[in-house]
Amino acid sequence: MTRLRGRETSPRFNPMIRPILALLASTLLLTARAADPAAPADAQLNPQGRAILAWFQQLQASPQLRLVSGQFAGWSGTASIGELGKIHQASGRWPVMIGLDYCGWREGDKPDMALIDVRQPNELARAYWQAGGLVNLSWHAPNPSGASLKTNNLKLADVLKPGPLHDAWLKSLDTVAAGLQELQTAGVVVIWRPLHEMNGGWFWWGAQEPADFIALWRHMFDYFTHKKGLHNLIWAWGPNHGQKHADLYYPGDAYADLIGLDAYTEHINPDKIVGFDRLAKIKKPVGLTEFGPHGASNPPGNFDFRRLLDGVEKNFPQLRHFLCWNEKWNPAENHFAKEFYNDPRVITRDQVPAGLSGR
Image (cartoon, rainbow, N blue to C red):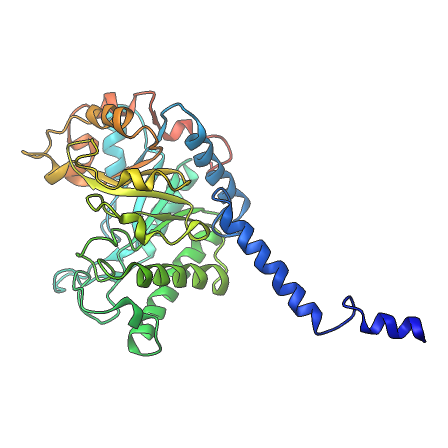
């Protein structure tokens, strides 16, 4: 009886202690994950996603300049593989990443009234994945207030409070999550790049208190990862260049996998691409999450894309990935696309390691 009483009152068998120990173990696990920038943001990221992320990390760790190439194909409803086909026609190469967006537009809508359309982006994503490429998916999210995408008329903190704004936000998240779930079911890993250029004032989520933006990002992350069970997402965070303290909006190592700057400029130097030095201190694979010559060069179509590579090598040797915007920003619409895409510093689709995509 004495031994039995001793067991009953020991911490090992005390039912009040067990939940505390479980919470402590969980806290230690989260702390360890957050402290390790190489760990996936999603602790349950699927094996193929982990392999893709590890590839980016290996490239980042190497002293050799190799850039994972990407090309935006267009908005939902109007996106076309032809944007990438232009590059193939000019250079004989395909970009590694196809860039897509879940934002679409209805004919006759007021300017910048975004809607969500997952159908066409998912079709293109599956096709490019099966061809051996990777999928980079952004989202110009509709304004929860019902105003235009570019109307900065609300506080992000209010979006996370119970009420109409929060309800509209959740409805948008549910629609997007359903599209991402389709891709997960199809085996497609997505480099997911939402809420970009948050340090600029031209989108409803932009130029607000950094803490409020971080809370919104983390809410989306938790909603998709834990509530919706999406474990095919590599989370990419991309502020705009030009602001010195873009890193204030960084959601944390436990909430991002890839980072970069959106930069529209012809001048590939620190005077024009401001803010990179602080991002480079974050230990994540860093790149140009969007790139295009400013105003598509002046006049359009005259940018020498070899300057991008030379400028990166001289001034931003830590860069490891880029995504060019479409139409007049496409390398094939400018000069020396063939030389650019055949430069050994640029990684093309045929050079993606076996097993990383659906091929």
